[in-house]
Image 1: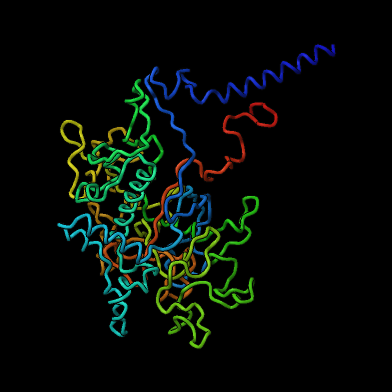
Image 2 (image 1 turned 90 degrees about the vertical axis):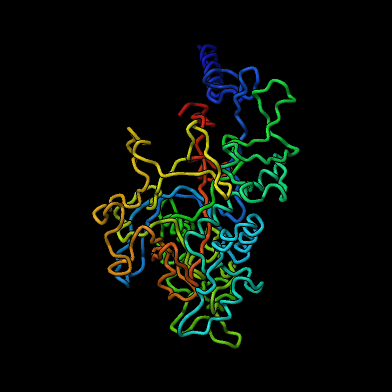
Length: 508
């Protein structure tokens, strides 16, 4: 009887080990067909190794989750436009700082160099330095010096409207991805041939096989569909390779507010112990604890009181921000993000509605979707690139979406708000009875010339997407693809992805 029991135990151990190996499988073979991946014998279907999304230049990973979106301050303006509600955002990346003058000048110089015969492109991207002017103030020095003088190179760029900010983000995507291809040795970037007019590198154009000026690098990828090793060199990266990064873009309002709240320091067992009014654990803007040298100092660049922009002279300047301050000023929040409360207000992607709290999704809330599709010729091939080297897109139509349930038309900005629309246009008279229309974009956060009320992450304002302010800047964001927790060993609730418990060797 004892021998039989031992035999049964041995059988259980062997069976458990067999289950583990069967569940994990051979990563080099398909669990569907049993045929080998990356093998010319079976057609060369590629299964590349993927360690996870790399963190793009300037970005910080913000692990997503649910949070109470909305204002925790008294609604002093009685707008009632951001009542608290629970929403969830996917993990994403956010710029550590606001985009600085140096960053934006890099963009301007690239446009001048790349499109020497099309000065409209360069001129259309220039910041509006006249945004500093005030009828009852002498701000001419900032008009002349703020953007171009090296003394201000690390200060946030201002005078940039929403459209210009979005164009900057698109440009940044392409520059980062061409850097990655060059860094990995897949292509060899040559500025004299690869960055002129419509031949400049564009990520979507490249992925569509329309980038004709590829300089072959020393480290090509493998094309396993070719049997001869000499023919297995591949210099065209595909989306499936996981090498190129997703788009840089403006953050959504929900993402910006989530990142600004930075509640990760206040959570225990999925409970938030204290809902912050600001991005720190206190009800005032002065430091009360910590190092003695820091006590009493102001945490952010705001207007402390009427006429008090920076403190009293004589060694006691407090926030020391008469106007803006360098983007790495003050203390970062729990995510490592600087100036999410003050310095400059920031653009978000969202179109403004007073009642966004009532008619947005609980997951990744956003208003502003206009769906597009690629322009194809009569043969189904991509149409000619535009003058900037980009693929051409058009709005989707109802005929494109027959039998589709989630949307049928391109412009969904006014969805659930149709009572205020007439043929797609707001019936409010812009500038007369209301300034709310499809061009009004949400701006978040306080600025150097705002009272501290606006430093609370839940407050919200709006501005026409073609307008700009000396108090308004921006930073970029990027979606986190795949696991929300980063590229560490941390997994979903620490459970093995195979479905087998590592300790008991049993299927859960």
